[in-house]
Image (cartoon, rainbow, N blue to C red; front, side, top):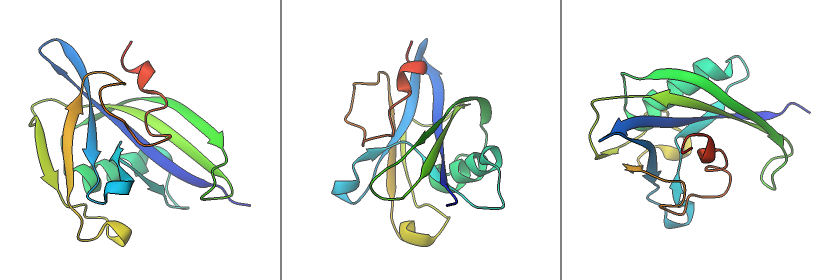
Length: 139
């Protein structure tokens, strides 16, 4: 079975000497607060996918992929086999919050995400799996 790959971007900035991570509130309440991410297409590598997904999902254009944090191999109830790939991405000169309609189409077409920054991994309740490696950012 071919695994499904998801590329997550822990988008970080330094604000008043403090590291912050970008999250968004999904407009469907049950979808909760999330980290930007997307599916890696079969012909893509995860590094290129995370760049494209960050542009489409957040609207950000000027950012830098700092490093691969980890590849998490596991099973979820939604798909038979999934690989979650987490990257740290840095950005500067961005607003404190903004709304953006993802441009990738699919299930997100017509939705508006509300983006904002958090300063600790426990500041908000992030949906399961998305915040698993925030402790590597907030050290």
